[in-house]
Length: 479
Image (tube, rainbow, N blue to C red; front, side, top):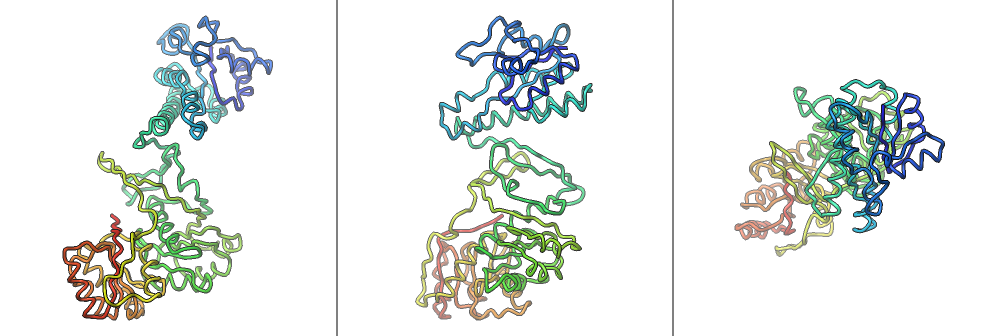
């Protein structure tokens, strides 16, 4: 049996090569790999015995030879039974500039992996040092084992080429995935689902520490929304999320328990079975306040050991996080790829008062807080904020005035006085009806992007009711 070894990453290579010799393999290696092995006293043949050359083009050509590929691709006769390779470290060269990326642009290694993968019925391909033990444990391999190794090699090639396209050739709309794992089910039990990361890209998953729990498809969607809302609430702020919409949110107030009580008061009924996200540490004191309530997930920047002990009889998943927001959002549905810039940054272009009555300092603070929250609410969205706390939510209604009525109804249902609250809309008020509804319920400050043909009508209604209207010049739809 013959094995071809040509690796850039030489981690654990010596031990693996020694194990191959014990299994009866004859080892052939490119010059750098052969030097590493022979220096450790491991018997190895230089690949030049087959090719007739060591290196060409200043070391850029080592394996690109018809005899090598004949011995990998042949359906019969003398052949390589095993190809062990990994690729030049392109990713680590990105920050070093174009010349470094070009020098670490692997050609021969990729070709070896593709050839060996094509002939997986006869040839095994190892594409990472992390697979060495797996190979030895499974030896002798079945055809199914070889096919799995080939799949891993081709995934490596795809990710590698995607990285080159994205960084060397500035083609950002290329995507490959990695670390995909099957979930228990999708949005509904009859749907299969998977979760993973986009290759060669930072990921929120790298910033999650799942202390306890087996996260579902819906969990992943909810936790991403919850982290966005809680982060918008500022340091030590908190948010309660149900089906991606915030049903409670509060800026930090006095202490963590008080902040939690404010967040919960937004809609304690909807909070049942929801997601609590704390943009701070959960200690034992806060954990005791959370314990009587039923949560699906509890997220925090840190959950102390003492707090975990308080939760030990609770079923909620416990997750620590560090916020991470990527600059682009991708959606792939029915073969359609949609990409957009993420809605990051300040949630307003301006805060321009367009009425005679100007907002108070408290009202303006509530507007700023509410704009950070509403950009995470499903459109059409109207929310009520008072003292930097969400007190009423109207989300996902086809009619904006319906969202306004719903926000007021929810606020009153849970004992909040709407007098003195601010009403914020994610899109312009197309008619003055939402403003009129707010005025009838004691609201004296409204914030919206502006831009409707009927802006003047809404402004007139505010003037008649001695209320403030603030234009933000930034729409905040979320679908």
